Length: 371
Image (tube, rainbow, N blue to C red):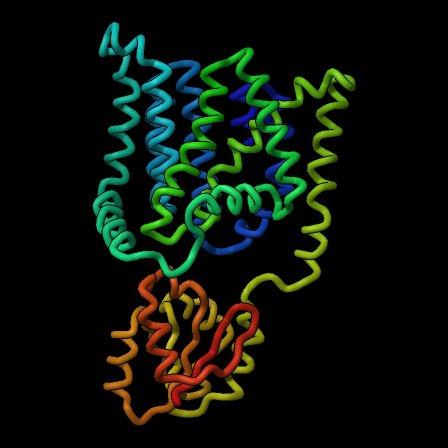
């Protein structure tokens, strides 16, 4: 992010933006999960860096690296396609006059798009099918409508209403400062913040929408905020303004970070596995929903020691099939909220409600037992 900010405006913007990201509660929370969000953020930031360099130098290498980095970000998480499309749209809009005068001026952007398609082609096909599945019915979780805007900005601002207001003012101020010197840069800030939120509002009526899908907003958001230092630096000396901004970024994050590092925030698989071991017996079934949460469970729980059989299920149909195959075995169902993403119809939870008894929960991990 430092390099992106430096490329976007100058070294000071890079320093402030990097500090904001370093102490960002939203970033820290998801960077400590073995999930796709932090890698998507990294590779999209890399794509943004190469995009800015390509726009400045128009070098073929930078455009191709932009396309490749964008494709890798897309491989990390399907929703990266939204900011990538916006960057391509921004390139077309800002280069429209040159392209109209000579189509050859679009060849570098074409190289970037070609690189993206080549690297991500298999995933593009899968994503189309996934999109059709996700939008086939109304979402059963997530946020919808205009609440997408508030919840996303609230969370990326550090889960604080007052800080959201402060950051929003600074972002608008930074955009205005950028507009005076670099209108294309200001257009990039506005389009990269507004269009993803608009797209998310539209999609939220047909697919689950969660603020973490928009984690790629962080570098643009913080660079916009950091760009306001040029206006604020008139109050103090230029160098001191940067130091003050870094200190403020740290101080406003302290309340959240103090709680975050002293109070359990994540799924407690260690404690849950210990409790589960005390409840299960030989020949019992352990059914995990969705199946991929078996990875953290396996780290602490040994079905070999307990003599249990571990299975996975995504839908109510999977659960019915397991019950038919093992009708006489006692079953324990380990569930996290991820099942709502895998089975947005709620079929699996409906089956559990009818055929199992809630046996407790520990830090977001829920246990059901066969009735």
